[in-house]
Length: 197
Image (tube, rainbow, N blue to C red; front, side, top):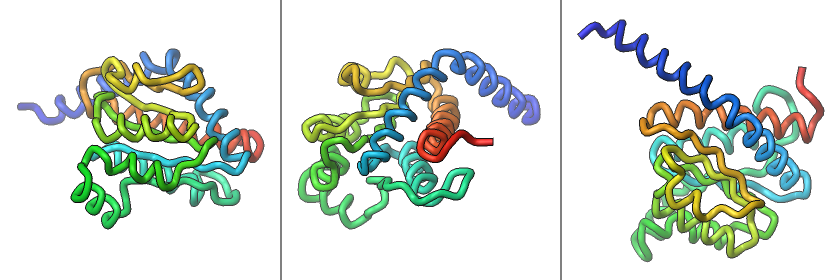
């Protein structure tokens, strides 16, 4: 196998997908960023959940809000529901793994907060359960999915936001998801702290 050619093909595939998604996702990302900024501006917070690479993306996003993205500004309230090992293992042991995010949403979520829900399949049972819990609490949802959006797409209300990367390959979906999250951070900063650059 020609490994250099293989690496180049990964770059080419990623570039092609990002170019294809640019037009369809840009308006949706901007609207979602504006909605999250409005919630933060009202004193609400963001809770984020996902599994595996999506869990890492949740932590990355929360860190960008609590710390900073590209400019100095006050920290913004965001919690990745993927990081408390005691809560995760207790809930998984006492209830089920499906409940690990939903129980945290029930405990920490308030009306007006936002749930950032990430699943490349759109069918992760614990993320779907978290969305149900968020809706019961009057929270808005920003869903990042892949493929056809799965169960998560069917659950979204007109007041929610769906950032769907319609691609079957998980790695490619995750690459667009991280770009979308950076764009969300930029939009949030621009809304709350003035236009950048």
